[in-house]
Image (tube, rainbow, N blue to C red; front, top):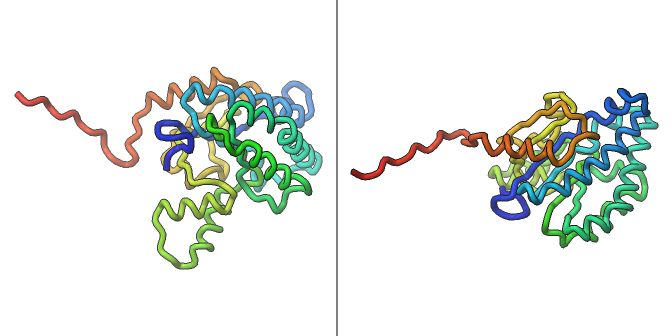
Length: 240
């Protein structure tokens, strides 16, 4: 499975961690960190095409995040609604296709409709596919895909399509998975799609993450040797 922007374009996925801690360290409410995090989304997405990234998947709100305090959850939902309202035209203008990956049946009234409108308005964008994961769980996606299979045979490709389809996604393997904020775990994110992803962890809090940080991660990715379970092909000696 290749990046949707075409052969050779990378699929980068980011666990955007550290918004709340960034705000708390500055004596600000946690929601202030989430608002600053939206600015980081904008500048990171804008940097992607020039770095060879064709698909960018961002982990914005997990299925487990519903357990957070009601005021924070409500603030995050309002922030999502605002993002869809304020960013759609800019995304369309810059050739960015927006998709929201995850469940939609538990989102507040009006947000699923706003998602559908934003996706339709940006559907022709071919410069970057920006995917934002909301109410997303990789484990739930795999379970739902297994239930849909109903005992039938499947290849990795066909099962991957089932996994992605359960969350309004598309089957695109992750090449580079980044987590900000200093933690080093996957947190139920893209477990199927990231089977052979290169992992990059940074102490940078998400509100401070920017193009230079993304470029550093891509440069490190380029230095790694990806064998996908095989061995490096030895050079064939020249004939005498």
